Image (cartoon, rainbow, N blue to C red; front, side, top):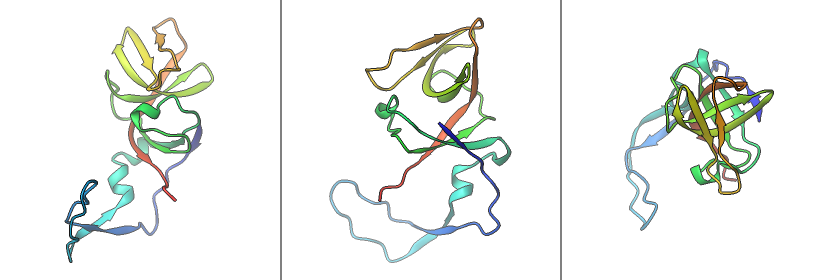
Length: 140
């Protein structure tokens, strides 16, 4: 994974946010008005001082919709609990996995059948870096 720093934008980009939701099934007529604007930074980053981004390498989390080259928004201020997707440091390596178990015995679980679960406890060199709070992906 590649660490990407988040910095405060001098000129934040606000995009139009249309009130009408977009249908992913049958087409729906578009509305002729805008609900407001959306500051993408404010939408994705709740705690700027505790948030960073990582670029995904590998396919162990494709079952959770996290694909290679996606950017993960990771918040260190969110307390990790079972069920969260987290970034963990295992020795010198970073990994993104679903967290199961409790504080005494965590299991880091891939969302792909080719990757076995990783069981970690107090005796292991494992640090939970933060909770994944968003995913950014370019489509084109």
